[in-house]
Amino acid sequence: MQVKEDIRKQIVGALAGADFPIKTPDELMSALPDGPDTTCKSGDVELKASDAGKALTADDFPFKNAREVADTIINRAGL
Image (cartoon, rainbow, N blue to C red; front, side):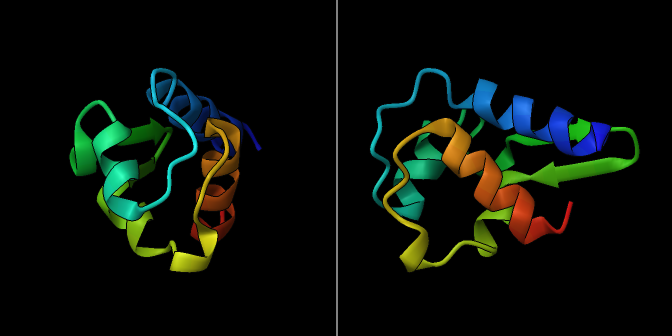
C-alpha cells in the first residue's frame, strides 16, 4: 500500500499548480511539470505520465481535481 500512496502523493503534487477542470488528455499532459515525461517512482515501481495517459479514456474527462486524476490512474495501473 505504501507504493500506491507514494504514487498518489506524487501525482497530486505534480498537479498542484494545474487549472481544473482538466477537460482533455492534452490539457492533462500540459499541466504536468515535465509533460508526458513526468515520472512517479516508489520502490521498484515507475509510472510515466505518457504510459498512464494511455490508460485513460475520453469518459474519464473532465477531471475536477488532482486527487481524482491520481485515483483514476492508480486504479487503471493496478497499483
